[in-house]
Image (cartoon, rainbow, N blue to C red; front, side, top):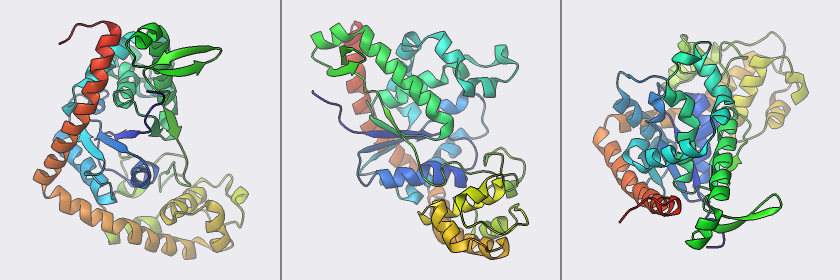
Length: 355
């Protein structure tokens, strides 16, 4: 083996209703990537218990995420769609990575600090070790690329740190077993078993903000349903939410620089750009100088055109849980075969006895 086979991996947590931010920032990107890549897409149900152990109906939430994948256009036959807990090798590799990663690395993770808050001593160990499991999710398939949002960049950097330390620590053993790829790390050449996974970042609406407060990210947990567009919203609800979205009294600018200091305007322009597969510049070229009374109806029509078919298909799929379970079962079996091949090599590299 002289290089790592290109492979895209990503996952979504089954926590609450999916919204427009999840669609534009993640799922739509997943759909586009499958045209030119081998892809593995995962519902990361083990991650969902790190911050909240008890859920009302985790199984239904897992099926809902899967339905969104399928409704958006992910092909579970050409690619792999499964739920994380079906493949035990995720947890097995995560334990190995817990022993590779340093406590100082974990303590620097800003997402842990944000979620744990001031009562950090009372946070679960799972929340602290969350990035180690994320690294295992990616590297158990030796994925070379991961689409990530701003909030996950630091975790992917940690994934690269873990891969690099494992490769450095076991370089001689990896070479002895003939399992490695020669990699340049600084001035040194090592035999790497794991790739240094690259992020896939971008898109005009990679970060979608609340419809009620443009300074806050669109969230499933916001008490106001008018703050977000749920993927299961029907056409009337979609239109109503956009027309009620908070704005300012000024007309839209003709240049992107004119959106500075106008978070709500910037958010709506970004949403339009994301849904239309275009840029903010192109949107402002068309609507610059127009009032929101003109722009909002155009955005509502676009959102209904793009999202209503996804919502309809999601509702149809959710009504057929047997079909969703069959997709996850098939994906789990295929993912498990790849993951076990990786873990068999990892056990040999470490020196764990196995048949």
